Length: 471
Image (cartoon, rainbow, N blue to C red; front, side, top):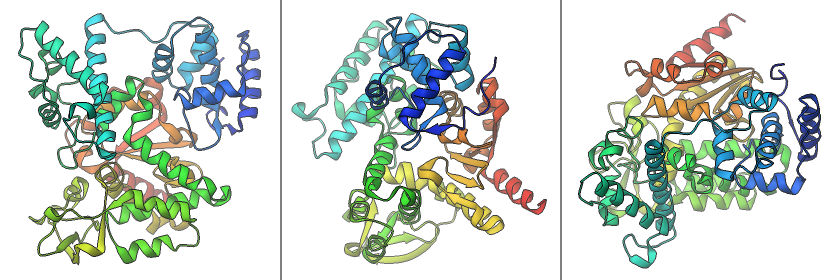
């Protein structure tokens, strides 16, 4: 008995989800008492259930049954979270069907300690980042998050146990070190570990936690602290009062404006705010996205705007978006604007939305020229990055390490799994690197290798454009 083919595409209300989960439990002879709606909502808030917009999904049915199955056996929350994270839909269905009561195999003691240390450090960096955004000073003892001090202690202990000096007593020094690969500064066991050696936890350009930092923190269960998740939730909350039938279009409108305006003039922002499709709450979201340009980024009271992506240029004439620099090696000044008449996206917005959006926009515009209105950007409140009709979904990824990207995908591919044809398009600057795509495919689960098409953005544009000519 294999995974029902219609289950991955199923969506419904919480009540309908519990009804379907009950029917599935009966077919599998699980003998489980279903949880209450309140319990399921709590699990969702705790991050145990994956979330695809406001609806519940077929995966949620499997997750609800698996959580109940493991909780009935007194497994702790962190073990349940790890079990769900390491199983795709088919593996989760198989675990239920076979009655496998043990979560995914645990690491050996040394690897578990290293994983705990890196995860705690990543979570600490996220907490420090949030504290800084709230106006707290870095290094002032009363303002240092507890998680940071705990991470410092674990790193010091690990160094001491391996005959090394404690180089982690200063928060400033630790944060500076995190801008470099861990092989250059972490205690020996972490520095030499293949899973962590090349990891950079703080983006050296934007000074925000990297996607690797987010992923390590996620493995430790710190879902509420993920920067990207916070951004998405902020926009979702702002959209809550928009009519449900208009919400997806409003979401795309806001995300597209930000993607196309890393540096926005006051006039452009005012025009976006006046859009009749956005309510005042959504319009006010822009205040959380943009901030004044720092004087160090100006020359003679002017700030230069990139002629390729509309992002800010540094005083030396290079674009602040790494993806734009990779796509356009030769910088181009679009305009020089009065600094007091423009706003720049906050560093975390530049890093997690504007920078990767350059490849997403390139894919969108290329397919739009061929397919027209069949192409959608950030459809259904970010189910994927670009969709082509109702059946084809494309997600664009830009991870420095293909193994870590594979690990994230193995834990779930989000809304992309709701499409009949699922395409992962890797940013050109990664895909053009020797063996990147091969290593990525090699570390995917067998089922994901069969169901997910992996290619570079250039190849995706060429492939999907040619398909139009075939009718």
